[in-house]
Every structure is written in structure tokens, then in C-alpha cells.
Image (cartoon, rainbow, N blue to C red; front, side):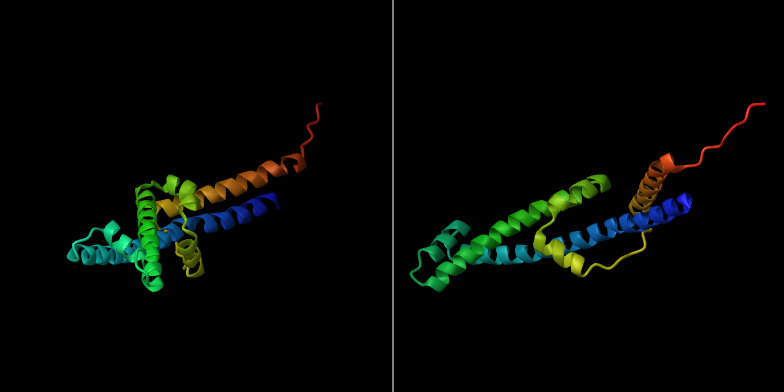
Length: 164
């Protein structure tokens, strides 16, 4: 019974952990897509400012100094867009530059709540055919089966040896 419980638990955790590389890949793809789109918006704004003889800060100052509240609010919105672009770009570089163990250890700190939530909502499980997926699967199996065996130690039957 103990071995069966250890095996079932180990296989269950193996399946769950083997999905981490796929989630990380789907998250990285979404993050990359967000960065690409924000890059387009940023470049378009910078080009329009340059054509008007301004740099980004000068163009934002012009928005903010406008007496029109719509334009002032639009300037603040663009400023938030630039900050988000910088943050997401830095996060993408960290995620792409991480090895599999660093990604597993640090992904929660990399998660942008909006992108992470949308990735989970649309997550599609995959069969772990990469070495990384197989590594996580093996680690999950070994952790649970070892834990079950360790917890069962006090309850195992002891063999009695008779001396003759």
C-alpha cells in the first residue's frame, strides 16, 4: 500500500511539475508579444515627436502643459505606456536569460500579474518531451515517493529475528 501511494503521488507531482516548462514558454511568448506591441507604440510616438522637432520628454511636456484635459490625460497615459514597456522589456530579458532552474526559482517574481493571469486562463497542457520537462517530471516523482516513504517509516512492520 505504501509503495502504491508513493508511486501514485510521485506520478501526480511528476505530471504537475512537468507542465512548468510549457507554462513558462507560453508566458514568455505572451510577454514577448506584449513587449513587441509596446515597442511599436513607443517607436511610433518617438518618430512623431522627432518629426515635430521634439524628443520624447519634450513631446510629453507639450501634452502635459496643454489646457485641454484630454491631451493632458493622453500624455500621462503615454508616460505609463513607456514605463510599462521598460518594465516588461527588462522582465523578458531576465526570463530569456535564465537557465531552467533559475526560471523555476524566479518565475513568480517575473510574473506580471495581468500577463501571468491571462497565461493561466488560456494555458494548454503539453506532453513534456524536452529534457527540462522530463527533469521536472523526475524531480516531482522522486520528491513525493521519497516523502511518502519517509513519512511511512514509523509505521513499517519490523521483522522479528529469533535466535536459536
